[in-house]
Length: 143
Image (cartoon, rainbow, N blue to C red; front, top):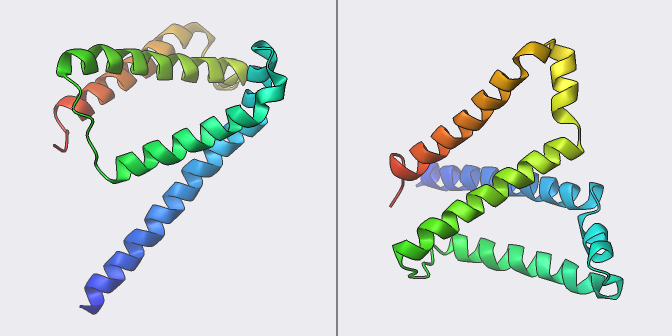
C-alpha cells in the first residue's frame, strides 16, 4: 500500500516536471521568436492580438485535455492517413524553419569541422526522424 502510494507520488512528480519543461519550452518558443506579434503583423490584424493569444491557449488546453482523456474522434482511416502526412510535413518544416532562424546548423557545422559532410549529417538526421517515427507508429504503437 505504501509502495503503491510512493510510486504514484513519484509518477505525479515526473509528470508535472515533464509538463512544466515542455510548457516552458513552448512559451519560450512563442515569446523569444515573437510568433504572435509577427503573425499579427503579417496578417495586418494587430488589433486582434488577444484573439491569437486566446486561440493558442485554448487550443493547447483543449487538445491536451482530449489527449489525456484518450478520446477518439472516429475519423475514417482514409482521412487520417493524408491528414497525418500533412501534419508530419508541417512539423518537419516548422522544425527546419526554427533551426534556420536560429542558425543552428551553420554554428554546429563550423564548430565541429563538418563542412564537407553537411549533406550526410542532414540526411542522417532526416532519415533517423522518419525511421523513428515509422517504428513508433507501426511497431511500438500502444493500441
